Image 1: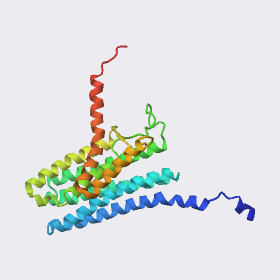
Image 2: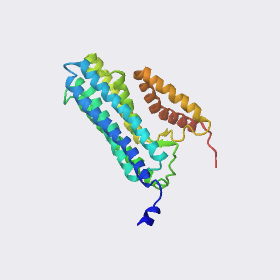
Image 3: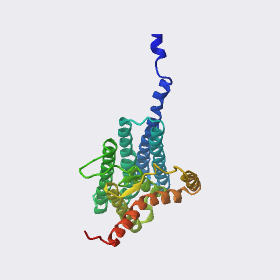
Image 4: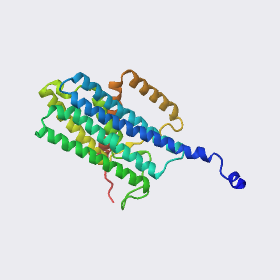
Length: 287
């Protein structure tokens, strides 16, 4: 028995303990989504009687989703850095993302914009419920496709190429939910407090954004993954950018979070438009 104990690899217990660390960050992601939903419900209950207090709950829900993005980013990087990535970890992370960046933002947008603005059963209300459902379905499909790419990285369907680690195929659901949360954080007061005409106009504009986000998630538009950022000489520049972003969020979170989320969501669309125009302007070579 003594010889068997001596032959065991060193630090085996420490290695097993490392597997818990990414799971803790994923659990924190789930907790933020859970708290965001509770805050959204509480905010909706107060939206008609006390809009100012309701705004604090909506703001808390938006910030919780923003914190969840941080936890979601860290858990994957920790798993790769410690080489503790597992298949169950991938599935757990995706289930957490469905809750935090799928269900929680739809609950927040419904409680903040749709329900206080439109009467239940009206065209505006039903349209909003439908679009939020489509957003949720597209986000779930996007996560399912990502999991399939992670487990079958060579070919998904006939003719598909290897997965590019530098880019995501389609808009990831965390920045999609993050942009919706940043909007609420920017103006947390219920939209109904702006008056009937203004609130309805704002809500219809929000519907257009939700539709764009849903389509972007299931599209084949490429979005940078940032997984290779900071390698080589770019490391110092990346540190400066991250420090500037952190200071911006600390001092002007309302504006900084909205700008950061908006830039990430829009950069894939902008690159796609430029590539499309470039392909049309490129002279066709005759065979």
